[in-house]
Amino acid sequence: MLDQISEKYHDESRQGEALMIESPLAAHNGRKLFIESYGCQMNFADSEVVASIMLEMGFQTTNDFNDADVIFINTCSIRENAEQRVRKRLTDFKAAKKNKPGMIVGVLGCMAERLKAKFLEEEKLVDVVVGPDAYRDLPKLIQSADEGTKSVNVLLSRDETYGDISPIRLNSNGVSGFISITRGCDNMCSFCVVPFTRGRERSRDAHSIVNEAKDLFDNGFREVVLLGQNVDSYHWKNEEETEQVNFAQLLAMVANVHPALRVRFSTSHPKDLTDEVLHTMAKTANICKNIHLPVQSGNSRVLELMNRTYTREWYINRIEAIRNIIPECAISTDIIAGFCSETEEEHQETISLMNLVRFEYAYMFTYSERPGTPAAKKLKDDVPEEIKSKRLAEIVQLQREHALGRMNNQVGKTNQVLIDGFSKKSENDFAGRTDQNLVVVFPVDKRFKKGDYVNVLIEKCTSATLLGKIVN
Ligand code: SAH
Ligand code: SF4
Ligand code: F3S
Image (cartoon, helix red, strand yellow):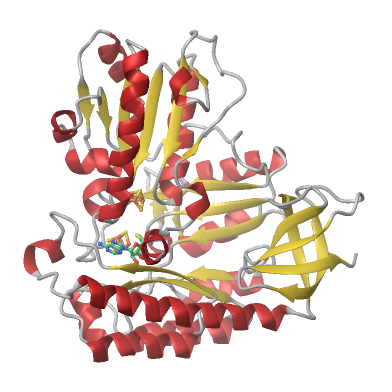
């Protein structure tokens, strides 16, 4: 149970999801692609770029890997259990490949980048290994594999943003779409593998981002989520350097696409979240009042060891700025329990910080040492596993109480809700989300459909869902 919570990253229900597209973009080459994704939203967004490249080659998708000519698994390295999950999945593909000679198995994403050619030695069934910046090379890599040569491209790039490739969206609910705005990360938090697997930070052309948002809106989408490891450090300039756009300006530009398009973003870094961004959010109705601001620890010594470059006091100052400028803003976070040399007193400072902020939502993990990271090289992973788990359990329990308290506060209030579709349990109910990203379930009203905004009076709640009725 605890292990499951600790592995939860962003959207657990999507881990291992296969991407399905109805029709090929180019003439069908008679071959089928199965693609499955793990990890963060950025990896899912990348799979949509990969699908676009493969469909251009004439592939069709399938949701049955036994039926595929090419199997791609887009992988995550963030914690050890994320990698174990991928290894386990590869054993499922082994049997399929035996039954279908010529089948190609490709490993994409962060684990491909971390292990590089070693993957081919460790996992004999793998034919191609492709890092996150090398997807344009897929046609060539597939061709080599067809000719019987295993191949690897894990070159990281300083400028690849796939800005000109239209991601394939047909797997989504048609309401909410991801747009990657930066790639890579320059921060070097000591525990984190991302700078090694995703390379240097780069920002995508602001106009290509706005155009993608327009395109989504024209196709019926009503929400875009701007993605980056550290969106606040977004900074793009044109070649002549006559035009520069920072994150606050980009938010305003995307929000300007249409008042009925909700704009969300993730992830913000406490050291870079500016008051300019907060003021832009406050004065723009369609920028959702929701900030994901990972704290990792509530203790300044641990934060320094983590190389997060802020202190507890700085983090609290940012929370106060949010509360002052956008009083209704929901705040969520990420927390790591049991980082190297963390004492019980230091852990209690994380608990006291949680009590101070009362986060809407939190992703909570035990520390998992990743090979090659600064922490793995310089610090000792010396907090025993049972202590890590005990601290995590305490954090999870407290977070549950806070989340339930927050949900209870919504009862009796009326919220504007964007309808995502039917609820998972029944077609008699719609499911949607509030501006603050809370899930609301309410009876279907035939006057409305997916993608519409409705006002919902909240009547009851659980710790995860609000229940109500339309009061339009
Ligand atoms: N860019 C984001 C988060 C990226 S990874 C940020 O800067 O906050 C998502 C989360 O995974 C992190 O916030 C952290 O809480 C967790 N994480 C990253 N590396 C980890 C590790 N080695 N062990 C445990 N949790 C880790
Ligand atoms: Fe990792 Fe830190 Fe970059 Fe986030 S900001 S991706 S935690 S190095
Ligand atoms: Fe995982 Fe890579 Fe994302 S390591 S969390 S898939 S950037």
